[in-house]
Image 1: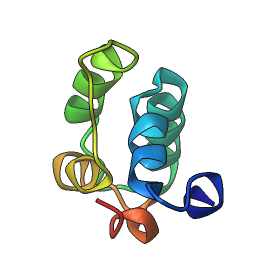
Image 2: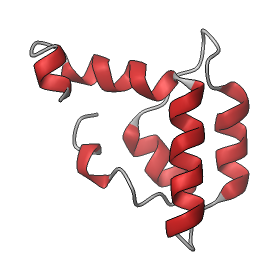
Image 3: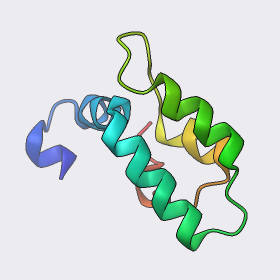
Image 4: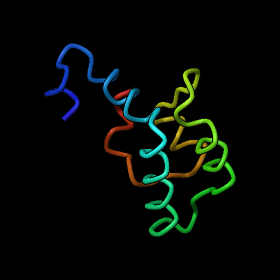
Length: 78
């Protein structure tokens, strides 16, 4: 989907999507429901920062910090 939005820079599309507070909250809720190893303390830190101009988050940082399993398919687009 990111390549269809911007075939020259799909990573930028994903990076912008992951800066959004609603995205972080959705990912956190999904992981809480389906991932018993999810780290809610790290999630809370990301949730508080999400939406701020200086906030950036890559799929790999999300996965490594929170033990996330839901977005492994896009972790290759760093």
